[in-house]
Structure formats: C-alpha cells, structure tokens
Image (tube, rainbow, N blue to C red; front, side):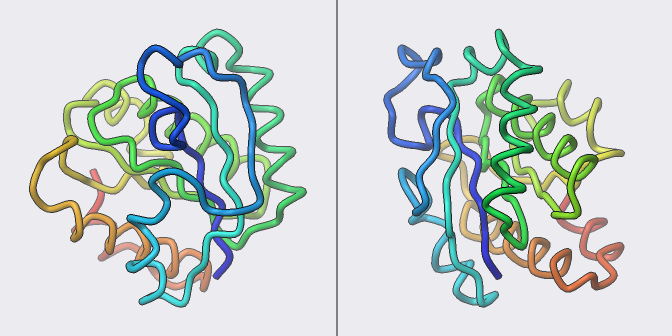
Length: 173
C-alpha cells in the first residue's frame, strides 16, 4: 500500500506557527512526523512514498489554487491512499485536512482519510458526512498509538475496497 501524506508546516518539520505561510511543497519520501505512523503502516503492509506539505495560513489564503495543485500532485504521484493529518487539535490544519481529503476523493479514484481531535468540532460537523475523519487525541493526549493504528487500518480497507461501515462507526466521528 503506497501512502501519500499531507502535512501542515508543523508536522512536516518546517517550523511552528510562525511558519504558517509556508508555501505548498512536497518530497518523494517521508518527512517530519511521518515516522510516528510508520510502525502502524508496516502492520498494514503500507509505506509512505511521498509527503505534500503546506502552511495552514497559506492554505487558507490560497485554498482554491492549493487544492487544485494538491489534486494534480496526487494524480501524478498516484498513491494507493492519501492520509491527511494527523491534525491533532490544530484548527487550521484540521480544516485543510478535511477539505483536501474531500477534494482528492471527489476528483480522483484515490481514497483519502483525515484524522483530528474532537477540539475541531466545527470542521468535524461540516465534513464528517463526506470524509472519513478518524478520532484522535489532541497533541499530548493519550490514545495516540491506537488512533495511528486506526488511520492505517481504515486506509488499508479503503485501498482494498472492503466494507468499512463497522470500522467507521467505531473509529470515526
């Protein structure tokens, strides 16, 4: 299972909130916090083949252009699945994750999964019926390993076109 990660500037290792205007970019390898997902991905026979990143403020100010480019980059990379997040309790990143996951699924044949904590209640309410959003703790919260495993399990089932209904009821909003 070839995985494309979509990160904000923080998860990509490009700095903190002060770099929220980080322009869209990408690398054909795992970067930043991708390593935290790798053990759970290995269990599902998955491997990160590329990472796309964008500052959450840059995304908010250039949403249409960034979305179009991310969809195009996704088609070119052609992963089996896209994981948007984990966004933890970062509101800008959560909104970017849900919007990009929805756009990828609407404009490609590639499944996408988003992940965020319940503090992003507005984004969850807006997108939970159109995007699979995996529940996760806020930054520093307990249960992170379980949610990382859940993200990878859902991604694997979506890639294999398996029934995800019961899993979604358990692990998603």
